[in-house]
Image (tube, rainbow, N blue to C red; front, side, top):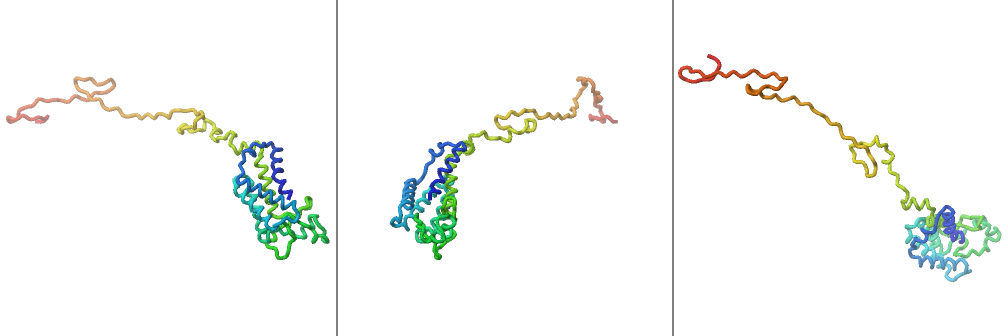
Length: 263
């Protein structure tokens, strides 16, 4: 459907209007791009060729190739959403014989038919009128979008959102690119701390001037050691010398010499 085909360029256009450039788009490497070309060819053939041969095979094959490309490029922003949407379309298509069932009431609500002509509508594009035996009906084409005269599936809506996001991110604004590349100046919370509040005992980061101050010196007063004195050496000024030691000569008692101070 043309809505899905236009989603990617619309997203890129919005990014350009927001100030983006094509530099990121030119640097993007798409993996398995040959499969993408084949899938686009199958989808185009299925859309514009009436009653193509092997119609029940073309849509499942195209969706499978699209899914493989989306999964291979899962690292690109938006590719994951696209892959989920494609898978939501592929499962009911495979379970219902290779075609996407379309609810008759949705065709009427979308303005594609009237209640009298709904059974005569030629859908094409890998779609077929819904039947009561269809499987996974909530994932089939049941969402009418009257402004564009289309009937969407939930998978179509998911793919559209993913392609819009993908186109925008590939051509993103300069502000987005600066944030993702880290070219903006990093904010260091340490720069916001006043110098007076920085602990001088910690080693400051390089480039931040921090006033250093020496730790206070604690002086311990110790008692002065006594200075030994002798009769030959005078005592220092201000000190009272101890009394001199009395030395008495020995005396002889009963023929033996003893030392002492008593009789």
